Length: 190
Image (cartoon, rainbow, N blue to C red; front, side, top):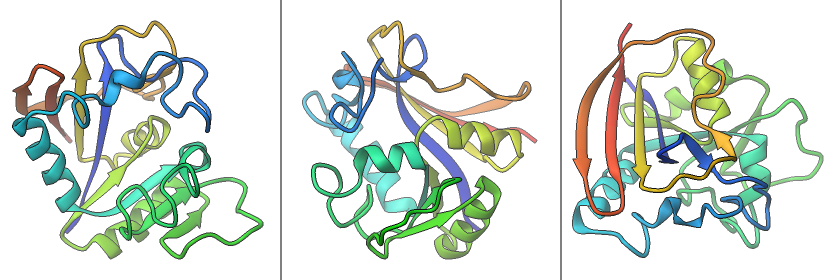
């Protein structure tokens, strides 16, 4: 059975983008370094963690804002964030044009998770962005939280844990520190 997990790079002050994120600046102002652990400052440990996440992912769920900022030319091209891995986009406004078949548009998080788990089978359903994981957590549908804490303070942008809808107990299951990030993994205790 698939587990539902989120994995985000986050500043020490809790932001997953800097201010003014857009299609032209998907990470926001001053937040390009949030992903240095993947690119410029990647170590063997960072690469192993990233490869494990990619290999275990059977489906992706994201919100319309993340989709609009990154799809197509100048973004992910004809695929999703993980190439041909199926992507469910949660939106209140279904698209009026066609998109590559890797994308399925749905109107709520619960439906997206239900459909993604069927496709993912025994792999992970990865939740992208901040809003979708927050909604899944409030619905009791998020199983795991992976955070890559990056040593930077952004002082603005999109907070990862802004609207939780309650208090939650977590069990830390992994902690790996590299020069570019501290990789934390938590199981959501039910």
